[in-house]
Amino acid sequence: MNKKSEKTPGYAEAYDELQKILTDLEGGEIDVDELSAKVKRAAELIDFCRKRLKDTEVEVKRVVEQIDQEEEK
Image 1 (tube, rainbow, N blue to C red):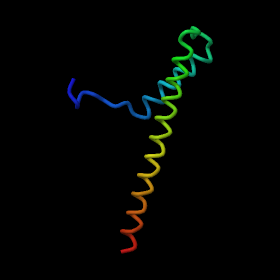
Image 2 (cartoon, one colour):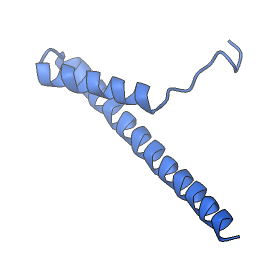
Image 3 (spheres, one colour):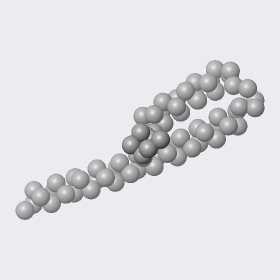
């Protein structure tokens, strides 16, 4: 696979996967052997989503500051 065809999952994909895991957990259909793996994956997805949100917040603030600076000129 080349770099262009490899896609890093985005926030929406991670959020959807997390929702699916939560639904599975709430449904009580997860085997005890799967439970640990699902919980670990959920933790990874939560960390990813938090980081993506924080990075987006920083970028939006940067853009807004640039706009404000342009308006001051």
